[in-house]
Length: 514
Image (cartoon, rainbow, N blue to C red; front, side):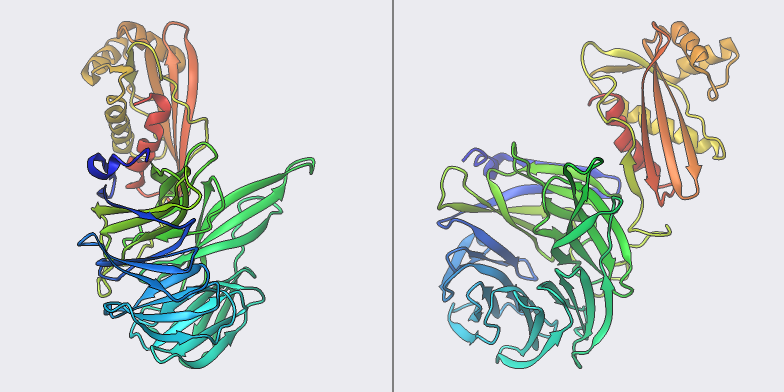
């Protein structure tokens, strides 16, 4: 396989403002099946199970790197798996309509449930392992006593198929998401509807939306929903598609944030236990890759290439493992499951005191950053260019903010092989000679300063605040031609002072390649 060598050699580290984490490919498991349709990891991260298109469930001891069982009872594809909280059982649901409860250690069937009589797409166990919820190609959610399989009742309220449901952290509620674009919160004990909310997350005017998938934060504070948004282009001759992740608050039903930019339908995804990332299949026709979206600011933290068409993604509750299944492009009947060991991502702790994701902003998880100009670097090839960065203007903000922004940007640009930075004390000396202030300089003044510094380029900029919106704008001035080579701008909604570091991290690569 093209990327097989990564199993031993590849070590990837990502540094963000809030911390650092790493991935190391621990296992690459070949599967003699067309497709691995689902993956599940036990709560303590020790065991992994995956179901394939031939109806088999394979169970692995992740820590030991050993296969424990290959379980055969279903007649067709496995769609969902769930471990109990004490690692005693693994429960599978398939397209054949059967739900099978397996003894995790012996691999024997403990119970077969056939009440559903339709394709099962979702399973979830209550936190105390007393009740099992299941849904699929029906508008109902079934509740069984577990592991006896005694049917306790049905939840009816969706107008189309239910694509996902989960118990709350205390087990007293159940939240479901349907293709009818509704979220319903149920009383799990009385099986009565508590609240019904409509999914209306749109980023384009007069658009329609289709709900494709859902995933729940481990603490059940919010649900993430994969959405296909579509609208007619101007003139009405073609359709425009957006592939979005939208997040809704469990308690209130309010839309927290919607992120756009995935390159394909989000048919499955996983949310990290520390609630910093959503991991999606972000492949194109040219390359297959997963993307780690920073859900605190709506940006991709990094992409990771996968050697085949991705079919399932799952992260463990303890934050130590990431599993991705994909098809072998060279064989119609072989797939792989890659398992990465992770460090630097905190696991979910039920009684932790800092589990909220909300910021002091008016909405959203936190600051949402976007580039509003072309993102191609203005300096990207040739010999090193001598560049002087002047302190940015900051009307209405303190000079300390302006200086900090400029210093942070200098630090980023200093990593570029195409930039030679002019030292700040040299810049200040020339400004003193010319009797200019560090900020408030015009383009013509900047050219004059550049000539005295023997610089090829001068970078001017400003940082402005409009309500909760923070805007950083940078202009690159060519000293020789006295022309502006280009402008780059980044905006941040729900911004705080802590957002500036992330904004500069986004802005820097648009000015010089590094």
